[in-house]
Amino acid sequence: MVKRNILLNPGPATTTDTVKMAQVVPDICPREKEFVKIMREVEEGLLRIVHADPAEYATVLFCGSGTINMDVCLNSLLPENKKILIVNNGAYSSRGVEICEYYGLPHVNLKLPLDRQPDLTLIEQTLQENTDIALVYTTHHETGTGLLNPIREIGALVHRYGAVFVVDTTSTYAMRPINMAVDEIDFCMASAQKGIMAMTGLSFIIGEKTVIEASANYPKRSYYCNLYMQYEYAKKHGEMHFTPPVQVIYAVRQALKEYFEEGETEKWSRHCRVYQTIRAGLTDLGFHIYIPEGQDSGLVAAALYPSDPAWDFEKIHDYCYERGYTIYPGKVEKLGMFRLCALGAIDREDIEAFFVVFREALDRYGVSVPVRYE
Ligand SMILES: *Cc1c(COP(=O)(O)O)cnc(C)c1O
Image 1 (cartoon, helix red, strand yellow):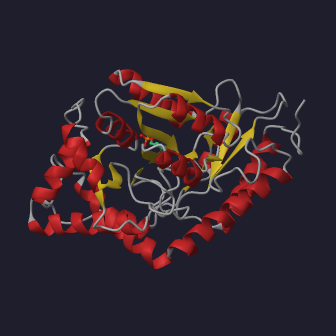
Image 2 (tube, rainbow, N blue to C red):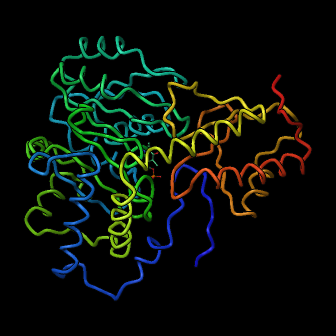
Image 3 (cartoon, rainbow, N blue to C red):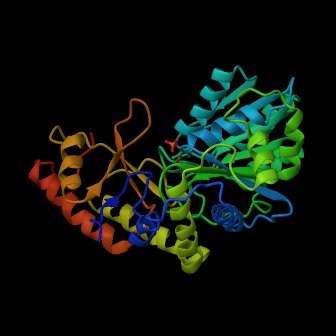
């Protein structure tokens, strides 16, 4: 048994012991047929999670954290003389904008309010005014705040204007049910340490084969991070172009097994139940939650710092950390907040036990309860 920590940060998530232990395997060269077979299994499992027909969609694996997927999609899927539209209402879409800036990719940064779902008419107007937009990019769930974007509605608009829709689903994949076709997604992405509850180091993009194949002729802007090159190599050789994170892939195989055993609906109900317990616990203590119910992802609650001078996030964090619970700061500039996330192999009882410790921490440092806001 490994000490069980409850990670309430937005990934990496708490994993099961069976997933941890799946990494302890005899040494193997990843070019062996035995390993190639495992990679295939993993690719197929990842497609199944988002109900993607293997005839139409492919999984492309990369060694790296989730940001590598964002980089790859943005730099690889833009044809010459075309533009990207970023529907930007959070820290992760802003990172998408930064990637465009680094590569010098022509883009429109549609900045929208961070605390509510976007006005679809503004997105449509932008598509009307910029007929050279070939790629629309957004985040399904802005993990910095907990805001959920209506991707199905955005996707329908994007497709009406003939563009490709790329969605960063890193913090929803394998948690909120996603169906590529029904949700109007052409490309989605995630990494192994979030929804599937495996380890860090493997990221993956799921996308339409016809679009990836068309991108063979698009400008090549990166060597290591090119989508078509990685796809083509895997298609020919059944493996990643460069060294894969071998042990992580064993953990992913085990995590997928556990995912399908738990089941899509059951797993999502568990995350919902964890999230509801978090929201209720925070509300009971008087905390204000940044994103209103109904516009939230059901996975991340961002609570505003109280104005009580006794409140000190670091101290509260350390108190909880020493007792096996990790809490995490927010991600909105100039607004003090912290996040409690419902990712990982945890359930309601873990949150109830956390709130006992959290309440002790508030008392220990003299933060008055219910917490105060001016
Ligand atoms: C976690 C996350 C990423 C990836 O972040 P890394 O630090 O590179 O793993 C990307 N997008 C979203 C929405 C995320 O939650």
